[in-house]
Length: 540
Image 1 (tube, rainbow, N blue to C red):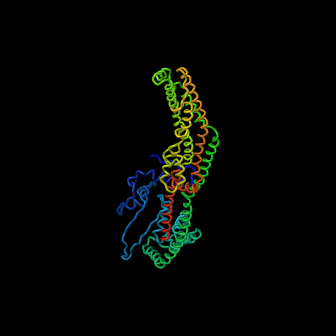
Image 2 (cartoon, helix red, strand yellow):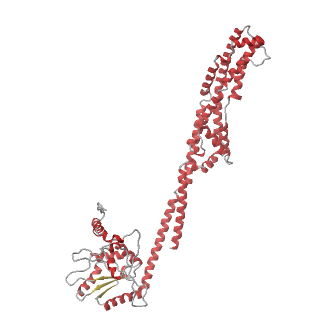
Image 3 (cartoon, helix red, strand yellow):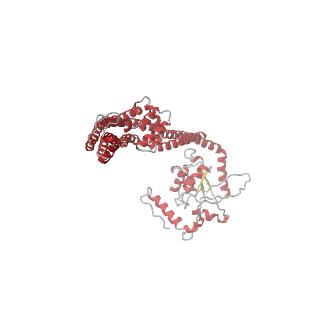
């Protein structure tokens, strides 16, 4: 697998290149030397004392080639051993690598260890031999700065760090120069100690001085640290409370269903009234005019009536005359013609219904377009009927229920209305009362001529009658819409009824409320989390 190319224009080019080369030259090139130690999950392995070095340090041959690579796969090493003093317990030495070590992440690990696990720091330096000028280097200053990040303001680093200068008998002056240079480089320590570390007695004396200091000052150091930590904790609590208040304020407006509902309701009602009033105005303009659909139906019926099939033929009249006499044949012919003509007008029932259904469908579209259609699964006139049934199940929407029941059940019928006018006019031309005498033509030919005239007169008088009734059709349609509109827009308390209906069914009327209700549920969960966080804050 090829090694990835270096990133272009990094923020810190030199650092980025150093890390890149470190990864490539150390980790990538030698991966086959330590890959057997890598696994998907972290694990702990025990190694014998003689092999510890292979996992914690590096060694080079005479040509400066690295010999050990196991440390590249190691995150942490813990070495346990007994102390000579039986009473000494829970004492640990943490050997932290300096900056520039061969592994990545050492800086972060060092800061974490200093902040959590270490009570004091012992910096060890061996000033170079006389004449080498090996004084404080940039790495020393950087190391001190990094260590300072561990506790920051809680406890100044100088209160718990010691510098040990390893004197070998030839670098006393260099050690003194090194010590004098430290303050100028920003390195401040509690005490600068000097000892020949090869001498175990001298080394033990150093540790005794450090431990004596800790024994005397540990409580004060802990108290100082705890005081600073408490202050930081209080500040942190205040910060948390402030941020949680901001969060609470922010989420208070998230998923605000009521505000959104009021806005949409205030848009809905004016649109409803405007649409209904516009529809009323449109129908009122047709109030004094005949209904064009009805007129077309009348013309179609008249055309069907013009067919001669409704007039008895010569043979039938002659046969009737031989049996019943010429007067009886003439009367019978008239009686037969009347239902023959009337049957054509019964087809107007469907035409009238279709005309009014068209008006109902236009009304239904108004409500469907406003979103009410989502409450029932129906369209056109079926919507009005289905919605009326829905409202009939409620007990707090009387005006709306009454209005939609009225429009859904409203019908204009030929029977019982126009039929009486048509029958009356036809009966005047084609008499139905057998007790009233009529003048009978003197022969069958004249009877046929007379019947044709009566047939035509009946058709014409019906057409004139129905043409006049065409205005009544529009009036009926207008009155239907007017009364419906009165119930649903002008009746006392109807606005409150619309408010109840819209509020109860808002998620079905407006699609955005489904999302808002989900947001409202999230809002409840967030409020609960904020309250829980505030409760946890009090326990800090």
